[in-house]
Structure formats: C-alpha cells, structure tokens
Image 1 (cartoon, rainbow over the protein chains, first blue to last red):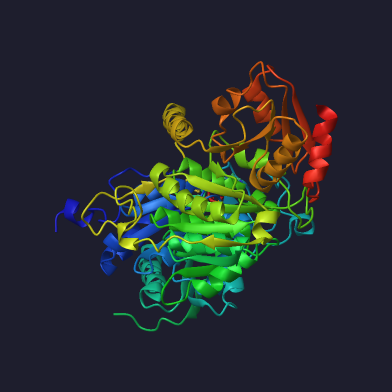
Image 2 (image 1 turned 120 degrees about the vertical axis):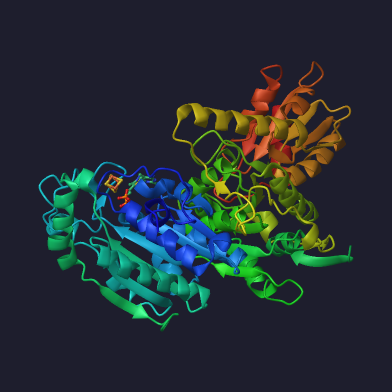
Amino acid sequence: MTYTERYKGPKSLTPKEFTYCPGCHHGIIHRIVAEVIDELGVQGKTLMVAPVGCSVFSYEFFDVDGTVAPHGRAPAVATGMKRARPDRIVFTYQGDGDLAAIGTGEIIQAANRGEKITTIFVNNAIYGMTGGQMAPTTLVGMKTTTTPYGRNPANEGFPIHVSEVLKEITGVAFLARTKVSTPQDVNKTKQLIKKAFMAQINNVGFGLVEVLSTCPTNWGLTPVESLKWLEENMTKEFPLGVYVDKVGDIK
Amino acid sequence: MSGKVMVKGTEAIAEAAIRAGCRLYFGYPITPQSELPEYMARRMPEKEVNGVFLQAESEVAAVNMIYGAACTGKRSLTSTSSPGFSLMQESMSYLAGAELPAVFVNVVRGGPGLGDIQPAQCDYFQATKGGGHGDYRLLVYGPESLQEAVELTVKAFDKADKYRNPVLLLADGLLGQMMEPVEFPDFSNLEKLEKHSSWALQGTELERKAHKVTSFNIDPVGLEKMNLNLQKKYAEMEKNEKMYEEYMMDDAEVVIVSYGTIGRIAKSVAKMARNKGIKAGVFRPITLWPFPYAELAKWAKKETKLFFTVEMSAGQMIEDVRLAVEGRCPVKFYGRMGGMVPTPTEIFDKLMELV
Ligand SMILES: Cc1ncc(C[n+]2csc(CCOP(=O)(O)OP(=O)(O)O)c2C)c(N)n1
Ligand code: SF4
C-alpha cells in the first residue's frame, strides 16, 4: 500500500480541512465515526445532527446529510428525523456543555424513549467554543474562566457523570466511556462506536459513546501535556468501560 | 368533501392537519389545547392515517422534534398555548433561518406569566413581530370560525411548503373550545405532496452531494446575504399572501377592525350599529402577518369618521391599524384582558360613546 492509499480519509469525511486546534481530539473522533459509517456501509442512509460548540461545523466535515441543532437540542432534532424517517441512520455529535448542561433534559428523555439514534458525546471538561468556561464535567479544583479560583463543589457542585446517570435508563441499548489518547484507544473506541450504531441498526435502542477528549487551547496546556493531564485526571474522575451492552456480538 | 360534522375547535384543526397530509405530530400538553394532542394520540396510529404522535418532554423538545422532522421535508405539526409558545421561540427563529416548513398552532390564553386558561389575543406582538431573535417572519393566520380554521390549516401546510417557512395559526381559546359543524376536505394524496428532494435531509444514497440545512453563516457578508434572501422571500409573501374580510364596508363611516373570534363578534356589533343608523362595517385581517396595511388604508378617507379596534388584549393589533391609517382618521380602542371576552352589547355601548 502506498502512503497516500493508506492515509486516504474515510469516504464519510469531506476533504474539508478541520478547524480544530492542534492537539484537539475532535478531529480523531470525527475520523473514527466516519470510518465506522464507511465500514457499516450506511453513508448514503445517514443523517447527522451537529451541536452548538466547537464541533458546530462537524456537519460540513461529515459527508452525509446534516444539520445543526440549537444548543443542547440535538437529541430532540434527531428524534424528529428518526420518527420521520425510521429507515435512516441518525446520529448526534455533542460536547459536554451541549449534552450535559443546557441539553440534559433532551438526552435523558431521548435515551428513555429508547430512541433509535446514536450519540457521540465528547467530554473535554470545558466549554471550548465560548472560550474556556466551566462545563458540568469540569473537575473539582479545575480553573476555568468562570471558575478562576478552581471549581468549588460548595458553589458549583461536582462534575456530572453522564454515563453513570444514563446507565440506569432502560431505553439505553449501548453505552460506553472511552478515550482516544493512544492508537490502541482509537481502535477500541472505533469498536464501541460501531456497536452504538449497531444498537439503532438492529433496532435495539439508544446508543451513546462518551469520549474523554482534550482541549489544549482552553486547558492552557500543550497537546502533549493535555494527553498526560487527561490520563492522570480525567480517567480517574470518569472511569472508562462499557456500561450497557444489549447489542451483543457483532460481525 | 364528506358532509358536515360537529367538532371541537382543537380537534377540527387536528383533523384538518391530517387531511392536509401531516403525519407527524409532536407536542406537550397545555390547556386550552390539550384536546389537540389527545386527538392526535388517538388518530395518528389509526390504519387510515398511519402517522406518528409523540408527546415531547417539553415545548423546547417539541419544537426541536419539529425542526428534525421538517429537515426531512415531511409535513409536521405542533400545537401549544401561550407559555409553551414562548418556550419555542429560540427554535422558531432557527426554523425560519434554516427555511424549514412546519405548521404551529398557538391557542392563546390570558397572560402574562402563567396567566389563566381563558381566551385571549395578547400574543399578537409575539406572533407577528417575531417572538424569537433575528429578522424573521412567520406567516400568521387568525381564523374566526372552525370552518375557516380548517381551511387555513390546510392552507398553512401548502404555504409552509411553498415558502419553506414556518406558518402559525393564531387561535384564541374561544375558537379552541367551541363546537361547530364543519366540512373537512378530502385526504391529500401523500405521494403528491412536495418532497423537497432538492434540499431535504433524506440520505444521499450515494447518488448526490450531501445536503446541509443550517440557520447560520459565521461570515457577516454571507449572513447579510442570507438575510437579504429571507427578506426577498418575505416581500414575496407580503405581495401574495394577504387575506382579509370586509363586512358591510361599502358605505361604512365607522370601521371596526378586529381579528379572530372578536372579528366575528364585531359583525354583530356592526349590525347593531346599523340598526341605530350608524354606518358601521368590519375590516377583519385574516393574515396577521402579512398585515393588510394598504387594503385597510384604503378606508382612511374623508367620509370615515372612526376606526375602532377591538381586541382581547391591551391593544396590540391597533399599532398596525395606526400604521395603516397614518393619522388620517381617529383610531380608538376597546379591549378586555386576562381572558375576559367582551360581549357584543359591551362593544356596541363603547362604540356609541365614541360616535
Ligand atoms: C442558547 C445558547 N446559549 C449559549 C450559547 C453559547 N455557547 C455556544 S457553544 C457553548 C458551549 C460549548 O461547550 P461544549 O458543549 O462543551 O463543546 P466544546 O466547544 O467544548 O466542544 C455555549 C455556552 C448558544 N450558542 N446558545
Ligand atoms: S477550543 Fe478546545 S475543543 Fe475547541 S477546537 Fe480548540 S482544542 Fe478543540
């Protein structure tokens, strides 16, 4: 295989250059979602819902029909699409502010209805797009522009554990928390994302994969430092693993 | 046409939507329109209809489900009452910006705040001047009777498709709760409805470029262009879509201006006035946006002694009446608020004081 063949992007990504910062994991996550869509052979049937957040432009990066939901409402938008077109594959791509703050209601209710949609949830513990404010997933003591003295649980509460909350919901068919820090992580995450899509393809229920992700720009760290910080801090607060799997083995 | 049947207002609108080819309903219960979702919950699963009813977890979710459904190019409906419509406003603006066709029903109740569950017209500003953010317009219909509501519901879907724009049926609680005989149109042939295949999100099937539906452009030059295109569309709507009724206006010297069920009551008032020798007529806007300014302005002439605007509000539509009249004749107002419905005699007495 020549270099260009091997590194040709997946078909489900457009040739458009990512707008993400160096060291940001959004790009890696996009790529593996696109690879999964390719491998499942569903590109022509897929509809995507982008959030408001740094990945607002993901609808331009994925080479599938797509739209942008109002901040936090992607699961409701995806519900409308899927109910209108049950024969389509529908996924949302959301950040932690989008999904776990303003959109908490929509994600829980969509999961609870067992909506046959897939959600890619990117948890970087901060609001990237708006310049580094506190997210619901911000770690205790972590400094952000709106927690300049560090997140203080007495005032701001504790980081919310989305996967742990959602695992209690019967409508959830597949749920996992993962990261994309190493090539091994990437391969593993890809399998998990594939299963989350299989949950809707096989009509089992709602699928979500939470991916721990970096934001070097707003963490104020270099890309390498960010990886280290994620490993040392985020994986402790947010344990990795498969929380729900009703999909079973896939080919 | 299938002959006349007695129905309740909210149910008439629901059935009309189904006849128009709407097979997707999303909504959240709120009085005085909960019979509409309840009707849809019964009707949508029926074999003859085979549609989707989904109770959303909030009006915010409902309007976003509409956004998603509309993205696929299919006809969808939601209904609510005042506080619920307020909750929908962010996404109304998104729908307008993304040029998505969908139909909304707001059965207006007394406000502000939680208000009450009685009929009111106090959401006119919100409906016609843009309840959400940004320069956008909804096509807004204000029916006076159930038959008209049925016809306007069907029209609402056609116009939403035609202009790729949300359309609002602004009904007051009176209309929602009253029972009247109506004649429903036949079922539309779903195959013949606009598919919106040139832009809707239906999957590329690897046969075309991916479609993108968005309500934004981060480049101000591009966003201004997008806005100019929207304004062009709105101008087109203003040119083609105005609807109004003139009742005993030929020789009228007193012009009662009212919409919705008050427009209907105003006709009785005009008759009462004529019995007393006062040449009164009624001008009833049917489209609240676009408002029939020029058509109303035509009556702002020498012989006209008075424009008398009657609303179930503190005076909202009267601002449009004044814009039309441009100071050429006196414009007076009578209104009740908080869900109080004025009687014809009450309005007539007020009119007699003024003339
Ligand atoms: C209704 C509304 N409120 C607030 C905003 C501003 N806003 C845009 S993105 C965002 C947070 C994004 O953070 P996150 O979801 O974590 O995504 P990230 O940018 O980190 O990928 C906020 C608050 C908005 N666009 N709309
Ligand atoms: S601000 Fe953070 S989340 Fe956004 S693109 Fe940059 S690194 Fe990624």
